[in-house]
Length: 142
Image 1 (cartoon, rainbow, N blue to C red):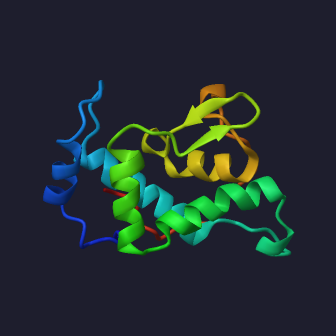
Image 2 (tube, rainbow, N blue to C red; image 1 turned 90 degrees about the horizontal axis):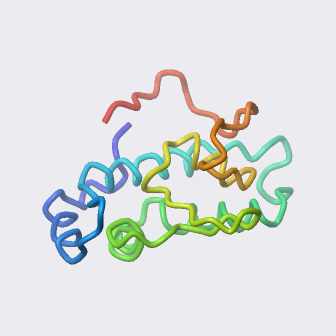
């Protein structure tokens, strides 16, 4: 799957990363991977049989963040890179355990599980229920 953000070059990401000194350091590949995984969740999230209007309000809140930031608008992706991805800010706070949630460190299934259920990656195993639909032929290699 190709990124919706081809305008965001490695050099542009590198320039933003140069503004921050985190340990461990964030990388261009990590930023691009987080964008791709979040984009997958946006594109293939399983809203259930009744659609998005019947989601629990907490799920709607978490999904609205994904929709706002990862729907394909380059300006929003650039905002995320500068204000969240590169500087180490959390994407959200898990309301049940009050832990920071960083999509930078999550894979696509973990992001989808967090959006769907408030799953905290620190809890270990993913929920067994499928949390989003993705076509089998989708190339996830990066």
